[in-house]
Image 1 (tube, rainbow, N blue to C red):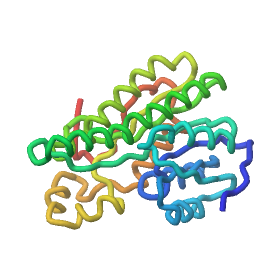
Image 2 (cartoon, one colour):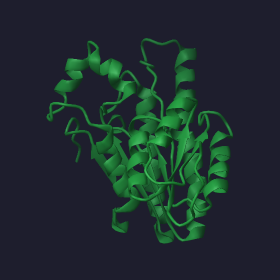
Image 3 (spheres, one colour):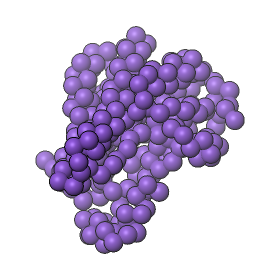
Length: 256
């Protein structure tokens, strides 16, 4: 059940917040006193469990399939109707589907690109546009997007996913420049392998040892670690860090 909103605390929209990284972000934001708009696609039971796990009051959940046209706009309208001013947007929702270039027919290749870019780049861009204009008018805000090390190193089995995240990085850096004068600050958090339900099958399957071997820590990143970086960007990062991309991959991929 949605809880009544209180206008006295900052409101943050977190997409894909019913499980994994998004749920951890929502939990840490709530612990810091924020009101959280918990977005989910279709798993209402998971969203209800995530909502129930949040400390404090004033949190609400919202369903939307962000890969579908018009859904980002509807979600934003519903969130702002419920919360009023939204202080920060965390673009976390994303999908990944295999589309290796030599092992997929052309129709499948095209569909994978359309679906992946719709969910991972076009929907975040739509939400960012709506949020940026609202935040600029309100005197400031924070735009945080969850990217991936794949945007830098490439993903041979998932090239559409890697490209979508690289586009999100470029979008964030472009808007960091465009919006700095309006006190709207933009950040990227780029994890590698994260121990979530979605990655469990791969981590426990035949590829698990080779994936683990990439990680000097001897383990993959925990969702709470990615969340800590995202919450830092939402609440604590100084203005001079706008445009930054924070790697949270346990030194599994290093760039300079």
